Image (cartoon, rainbow, N blue to C red):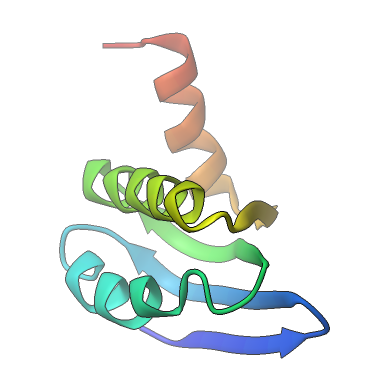
Amino acid sequence: MPITRETLDDTAHVGIDGELTIYTVAELAAALLPHIGAAPRLQLDLSQVTEMDGAGLQLLAVIQREAGNTGTALSLAGQSQAVAQALQLCRNGAF
């Protein structure tokens, strides 16, 4: 799973390309979580995520929690259709 990281000014820009699923979250968590708090702002680009499941949603919740714990301002730069659909299911309580 390719992850891009770049820090410009006070913002760490992180992009995820590929699946955000049970098969990839452990690797992603290991790559992302240590960097939260390294910059005052974290911008997460999810525009290239091809698939997202409940484990991916959990990882996003952990990233949000850890950003809050470290005082890091978190924002989303983009959402693929897969991400938008997963988030919409959560908002609608479709289950």
